[in-house]
Image (cartoon, rainbow, N blue to C red; front, side, top):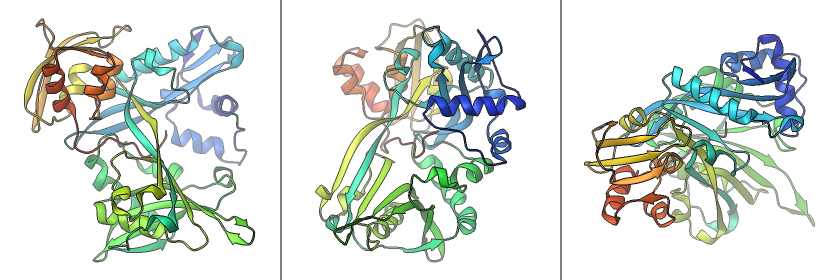
Amino acid sequence: MEIRPITADEVPAFRQTISRAFGDDPSDDDDADERFRAFFDLERTYVPFDGDEMVGASGSFTFDVSLPGGTATPMGGLTVVAVKPTHRRRGILNSMVQAHFDDCGARGEVVSGLWASESSIYGRYGYGVAAPVHDLTIDAPAAGVPAAPDEVRLITVDEAGKVFPGIYDSVFTARPGQTSRNDVWWKEREFRDPAHWRGGASERRYLAAFRDGTAVGYATYRQKAKWENSVANGSVTVIELLGVDSDARLSLWSLLCSIDLFPNVTADNQPPDLELPWQVANPRAIQRKELDGMYVRVLDVPGALGARRYGTSDRITIEVVDTMGIADGTYALEGSPDGASCSPTTETADVTMDVATLSALYLGADLADTLARAGRIDGSGEAVARFGAMLRSPIAPNCPEVF
């Protein structure tokens, strides 16, 4: 089947294909198609056609992704992947993923990233879980969140548009796994809030934390009222919360966990090293569920490993097994906190792994020892320990937003 980018006049069919695959209906507001054309790079769509029939969908966002050591590298964000149920088991997904990889290569994107609708799919394409997340459920009155160190204000969406992007940019490289945002992304993803996105909850609320008059953190959230036997049992859903330091983040949590009539607070996609459970009086009131989060696929080993920084100064030789033939080979990595180089080598490998395992480690998740015990890294204990120490980030990777 033909796999090609869609044209502007095919946007309505593309949106319908995506919506049906995920069980929705496309919004029917007058300018929805035009907004989609402005938001989505149509040249980065990879769409299968059976004759004239569109039988699937996929596309890419153009990102930089933050890396350990405060650097960033280009990443293609694979998204809206779907195949019509009438056309399954025909190799269409394979073709769309290959088209995405080819496109990333042509654009100099050394890694691909995605959020998986099904966790069993993407390992066979070389993706690994590189940024696990914690979903939080908080019994706010019982948690005992400390008082806010900073001033916190509710602001309008127009004020948020002036404040939030600067805060995001200031913390972008502070944590591995965060994706860059342009002006269109902020407008269409962060500040547009149609009713069909709300799931019966309120419109988005916008919070900012201020210290000496300077904005140092922000949060967006929704509220949903509920009464049981005349007792308030409403909920607050935190959409995103970021701050320049722990005090800024604590200030936002303190307000979110003290809203009258709303004792239930939930927050998805939080970093595993979140400080909040260690700051409250009753950590048992914060229930955490770990999920797979963002997946990464290393496409260019020298480019990807050379772009990040390392926890120790060392040299190690890595054999990467890639059944798709993209990253297959043996590479010498020399890295330090100040820089790195990586190149193909004929030396004997110190450690051997498949590309999905290397990809899972790429953003600095503390997994090397675990993956070795699981049989996914071959090498001596000493070599695995050195390799893990090099790649480990002192700050857990996290992507705060599903794309």
